[in-house]
Length: 376
Ligand code: CMC
Image 1 (spheres, protein in one colour):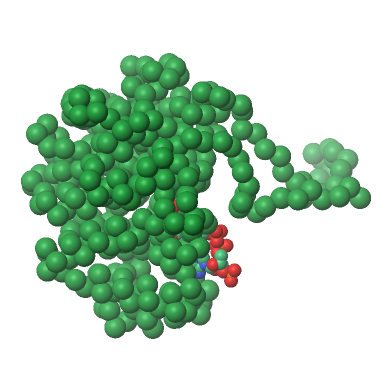
Image 2 (cartoon, protein in one colour):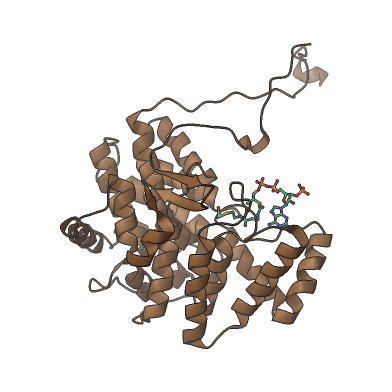
C-alpha cells in the first residue's frame, strides 16, 4: 500500500502563503501590522488610519486621512436595491446571513463590479468600508420594525456607526471603545476568513465575492461568531457568583467556552488587554459593572482550570453589552472592521496570484463497478 502522506488537520502550522500585511511577534506577544504594533497604534489613532494602512501599506498623511474620511462619508448611502433587500428580509434572519447577502447584492450593483484591477479593487474596498456600517445598522433596525437612521456626515466612522443604531449622538467612551475594537479586529494574518477571501480572490473573483466568502467564514462561533456566543453565555451565567460553577459544569460536559482559546496565541491574545481597558472605562462611565465582574470570574476559572486565555472576542462581547449594543450587531461590527484586512489580502493575492488549490488524502471506498439502476 502507498505510504500515507503527512498532513495537518485544520492546516495547523501549515504555511499557506506569503504576506507582507501582518505577523505575530510571539516573543513579545505583539500583533504587528505593516511593521507597526497594532495595540500601540490604537492608543493614538482612529480606525480610518488603520484601514488606510491596510489598504495602501503606509500610515496616511493628514491630507490623505482627511480625503479618505471625506470619501467614506460620501459613500455611506446604500443603493435602493440593497435597502429594499434589507426591508424585505424576515425579521428572524441571522444578522450575519443578512449582511452576507447584502454585501453580495452590493457587488451586483457596484459600478466597477467586473473590474478586478488593483485601482478598482481599492476603490471598491473604500465603498465597502463606508457602506457596511450602514447595512448592519439598517438591517438591525428593519428587523426591529424601525426605519433605518440615515448616516450623519458630521460624525467620524465609529461615532456614525453607533449613531445609526439608535439615532442618538453617542457618548465619547462608547465611540472610543468601538473605535478600538474596529482597529483591533481589522487584520490577523491567515485566519479562516482572510484565507477564505484569498481562496476566492485566487480564482480571479472580484472583491465583493471574496468579502462575501470572508463573511461566510467569519460567521461561525469558532471564529467571529464567538463574540455573540460569548455574550449569550454570560447572559446565561447571569451573576458573578454563578460564573465559576457554571464554567466548571460546562468544562465537565466537555463544552467549549466561547471567547477563549486561539490557534496561534497559547499564552494570551495581545489584543485582550486594550479592549478590557476600554470595557472597564465603559463600565465606570455607565455604572454597570455586572458583565465585567462575570467576565473576570470566567477568565479566572478558565485560567486556573484549563490554562486557557480569553481571545479578543471575549472582552469585546461584554464591553459592547455594557454600552447597550444589541448582540446581533457584534459579529457584523467585526465585519465592518475586517473588510479592511480582507481587502488588503485580496489585493496582495491578486498581485502575485497563483490559484489556491491544495490536495487531500482520499478516505472513501475502493473502486467499484457501476451497477444499472434496476440492480441497485
Ligand atoms: N473552551 C474549552 N476548551 C478549549 C477551548 C475553549 N474555548 N479552546 C480550546 N480548548 C481545548 C480543547 O478542548 C482542546 O483540548 P483537548 O486537547 O483536551 O481536546 C485543546 O484546548 C485544543 O483546542 P482545539 O480546539 O483543538 O484548538 P484549535 O487551535 O483547533 O482551536 C479555537 C482554536 C479558537 C477554534 C478554539 O480555542 C475554540 O473553539 N475557542 C472557542 C471559540 C472562540 O472563541 N473563537 C474565537 C477565536 S479568536 C478570534 C476570532 O477569530 O474571532
